[in-house]
Image (cartoon, rainbow, N blue to C red; front, side, top):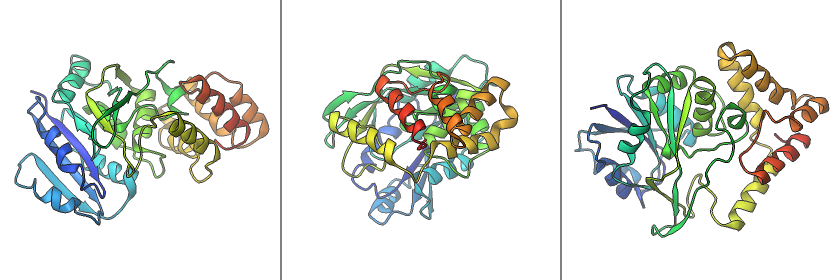
Length: 300
């Protein structure tokens, strides 16, 4: 039976953490262990974690606050090179009992040397697990052109085979917008994404989410506007870091697309070239139109 290691980063997650851990440990795939890194919590999170310390499947690291991105990259760097699969986990969701076994059905039976990433839709629920909606299906190709411009998959759905874990963890970035976006970007260039249109996770939305999927018209509009006006986190910075780390491994076509994004930050001609290109895109028509506006405004 393949061994699965679950990576969980916690931060001030006392409210729902015990419930989430119970659903992870209750998976019908039994060859499973959890590596948890607490990112400097100041509530009762560490107390909740300690209550699981008697379970041999649970290992814990209590670290300084790195933020969600840094914490997950630290977990990836510490993840087991012997595990057949690595699954990412958030602290406040609910996993259905066959979440892992279903992911392995999508990933098994393939060339072990090929990096594979499983991702799925999520069932968005509120604080008390009342269903709100299903996350969207991708409308366009899942691939590098999309990954350069859009964070498509929540990390909590992601399961990586060993080859995917290796290619991501061997060159971890100094800057990334989100850990799950970075993983999508790397595997879209060097492996294969297998998307599941069904959901095996209740994705809880509440006032204290660090990040999350927008639900409801108002939240979606506000999130789209925030993408347009933010200045402190640039997609082009992430693309430049990706080029720095992996440029020597990209095909000529991939490298040209990466450079197309980078040139948009350097000149008006570069922005016009990228805005009029179909090589880089977002999934929805509205988001794709906003992407073109963001590019022309030099805010990518």
